[in-house]
Image (cartoon, rainbow over the protein chains, first blue to last red):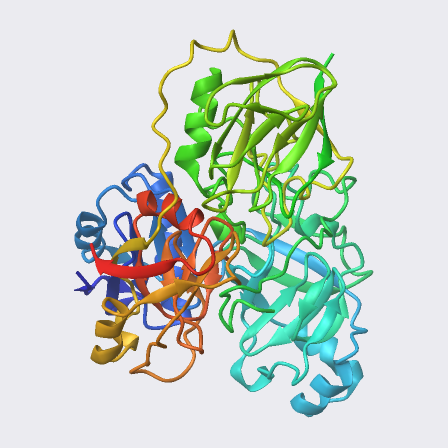
Length: 261
Length: 285
């Protein structure tokens, strides 16, 4: 039942593909990350406006948005094909500031890949605004886009068995902050001094970095407060309950190469 | 005073499960919840509990529990011997366990997962609206260890009169209906034919995250990596070794291996009870 649509995304007509994903789900595939972000924002807008049929889960990926728990996926696919989808703009979504000490063990390697000195990595990394494209790997682990292509770096050839909570890391097009200690293969460039705001299931908004949120990295000391949110819901309500550092499992069985971190 | 159960014998893997925590997949939170959901609901109904009250889910070897006050329990799901202080007791029907006695839920004689429901429900602390143990991300209560104490909630009312209960038997052969998945086109036509005609078996490496299979590998038509995308419950993902993995309730919310097919949710309870070595067939739904 793969349905091709011509919804207007990113200000131009871009093909989207609605792929089947079982009796009650639809996987909508977009041509690139930017139009995926735009489509995801449009889904959230329509749901907030009550203009979307019931959907239990809205799960963005790198080039897709999964709509799960949908009564009639085929009918939804037909509706989506006719949507006008405005492009995401620089002011779409809440902004979260993440304080960082640029002291990661892979700082020198990343500096060499970027062709700069280790002292310049922080300024370069902090000069861009990022957006949470999607979450996965662990609760509250956001895959952040926004690093220009010439600054993309490969994963480490040998993953670490333990990456500490708060590690600020790079791999491919993504930046991330580890919400808890896990194994990981990303390049570690810095540390969020207090990572507890990243994930707190006791808080109404459990994850600090939700899909669509914009993120700025600021050198620790410059930030007004850890994990400050501006222009949106107060994300940091309670940091006293501590980070969830349970090690009850890792993304092992069946997780794909991109699901690892 | 709250009734408590002490784990005299925690078994191979005993976890707290309810209906799970759907609705948080976009944050990277697996759905979790009882793998054999109909068994959990039936056990609860026989006790007059809400059908999704939290229960204990055992794995192959059962567990033994000692309540500090009289409790009524139902052991269902995978068939197993049930005793109270060594005396045989009913499986699949309400059993009174006096304070200080030991309820022993024996090893499964067939199937994998037995469910221990207690009148009042297991009262573990909810996380994101659910008491379920999520083994992928470590949310919810940790798996039971010997000596652990499990709190029990207050029963809503008396245990209903016993009725004949329609327990499903564990499958001798696991027949899984499949619908095309979002990445069926990543596989060769021959692989798709193999998928729905070949004999697979349940791998011993299966767990709450996924039911792994052994059998002929599925050959890809497309090479390369799939950018991470959202995964549904019941997705049949094909890792590089080509052997299909059926995603169960603790599955990762996003993944980068292609999903060749999707098994409808009602068929997953049988998958939860298919022991290692059970023959598996995937058939077009």
